[in-house]
Length: 162
Image 1 (spheres, one colour):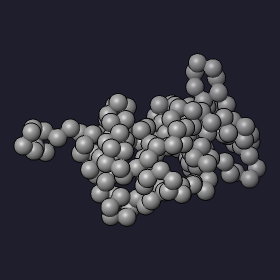
Image 2: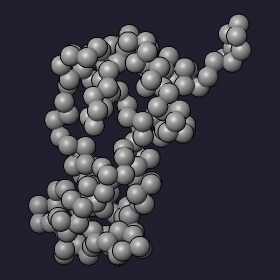
Image 3: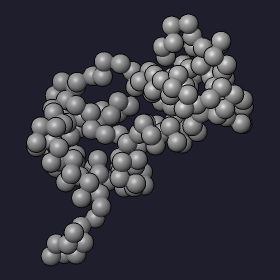
Image 4: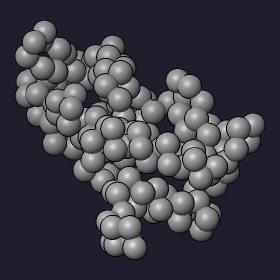
């Protein structure tokens, strides 16, 4: 993509794409904008580029950021639309479903933290919380410095939910 001043930076192109989602109504006022981790995964960009995307959207006055919560469509003060289920629980549910389907076999490792971060577009702390939840439920066990492994089926929760 070129303009009269030269190539348009990738962060501007991504900001344009998100702006289009906002103006078309696919992202509504109060909804969360994809996190930096999600932008990294979706567009194959570095974290610094993802930060530039969010900064660009703020400069265009399309979004606002609430520290430790995220970036939301609209100006500061617009009521935020909250997720109905905690993100770590959704991730834990996805992993548990993959265990039930046999995608992760007993005594075999589940995906690495990095792979789960990329798959779900979340931060490391969210993945760790999801894995801790699965461990508490009996789906998995962790071997320090080695990884997290699927438990034998008899150790899985009786209700089979995450």
